[in-house]
Length: 335
Image (cartoon, rainbow, N blue to C red; front, top):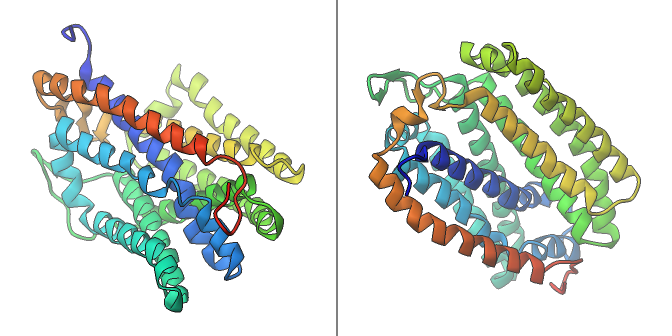
């Protein structure tokens, strides 16, 4: 059945979809945590948290799928990438743990709510920054010798990886702010709109800065972006980013509630497409392709059978949860 299908490409697309789904669904959740100190204690913070309470823990399903898929389908890439990025990945997981614990305990331990709010913000910032630094470290190149990581413990830390980390913090904060514009009313809604305007500028500037540096990190990146005839298509990506930025500002100024969030997601989608242009078909950029890192065809078929059942189920219950809890939310959690 799958003999004439390049399952390696199929699995690369599945994992890319899982990663993007995580960015979309957990990005605004982390963004709300990043912005938490900007909201007044009491009803504003309660409303912000209630806006994501029904869906936040399910969002991380996609992170598990992406990481598990990488381990199962591209084991060589997993064996190289993990030792190179141990530190930021551990920091990300600890940040997610702190955020999750704080999310639950701030309701059950009101005497120490201020402390849990700090943990919620700190975990969100650390997790987001670590994700961005890991991505930046992957893009700037991982030293490989034979079939193993050959770099040092601190190779992940560089000005570029920190730039990507800061850019992702701005981007997730933008998603969180525009989510609150869409889901809340009153002073919190107005505060989120004002924050969205500033964060939109910061995010677009971060995208521009990372995009300007990336082609010079690896010769293959430059070829993928600027060699003919690729350049005729790749130049449309920054053009679309500029158009999206214009409409983001216009819809925020025009009082729209839903469109700013959707356009912010569009900015992330365009950035993700740009990432794909830079690295495809490599899974370890400039070092290992998806075909070199792939598991045997029979293993890919076996895992694909399970994924073809589980992914529709995940999409169904996720979509149902978002549909049930659609609309505006208040401090008491009513939708």
